[in-house]
Length: 362
Ligand SMILES: NC(=O)c1ccc[n+]([C@@H]2O[C@H](COP(=O)([O-])OP(=O)(O)OC[C@H]3O[C@@H](n4cnc5c(N)ncnc54)[C@H](O)[C@@H]3O)[C@@H](O)[C@H]2O)c1
Image: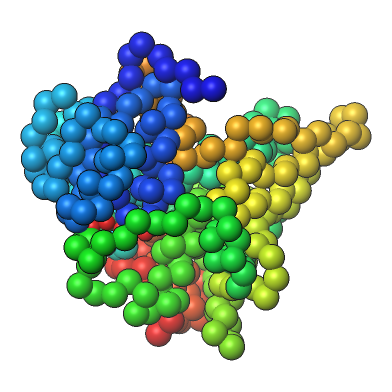
């Protein structure tokens, strides 16, 4: 049952493409502390159809017109990666808070520019690393912070499945499309290694950081065979955790995502589902003190609505920002760029020195 609080953040969603239709529009309508105040979509026919269903207070085809509305408090940026930084900057400069889809950008320098604007304006910016709002992963993080003691080693994997579209076609509504949708002139899928890193690697890197903190260095190898891409990444963390990340697109089996983490007073084994099932990860936490494994049910696995509620709570109640902030977004982009650089050079790459864009296979 949807319960709405009295004070709700007035949110405008920029872009009514697949991610808005599958996640953000519904999240705004269902969130306890936010409303779908506006939708801005360049394609008028698409705008009309989504607005007829979701019933925002206002609709726009022009972003500046939406930003000029004084009643609008926050923007969800749901456009292609290449526009995340410029669209977020425009919203911040117009005095709005921003929840921007991941990855926050495609190059270190542009994200540093965005960080400057966040600092100068003092506005809230959250990056849409929605897995941070998976109740299973939240239980893991809680255990790490309170009981696990020193971490020893993290192995984390994110392996997309060749059958993912059979799954998602079965559970998602048909997306509404339009010929008038705005697309970047450069095809984001022209370089698949780069595209997979930005689309999927961003989740893996953020989950690793969410669990074990700052990444300091990476040494990566990429195997590309029969159309599949597999990155094995040795990672160093500032807290001394030994790390190994596996990003594979796509495995010839079911969706395969999760991690194991060995700590001083316990261990965690996690299995994460394809996100479109909206199901909390199965996270088995072994407590050494009583030799017992516990698993949170996490009945509410709507990570996208939960991330919006967290964002709105920061805005409305001054609650601590539990979602990824601009520093987290920047660190993820640095890590992805460093992985590509390490693949290219065969060397260990220190993240603090990393500049440039997230590269591809060459
Ligand atoms: N969190 C996740 O797990 C997850 C999953 C899928 C996609 N994403 C991210 O979501 C983002 C968007 O993905 P998508 O597939 O919906 O993108 P898309 O490009 O298919 O759709 C974006 C929509 O925004 C509109 N648009 C773009 N610029 C506009 C502007 N200036 N004014 C008005 N409308 C504008 C376009 O017309 C289009 O309809 C990507 O960055 C992607 O990485 C995240």
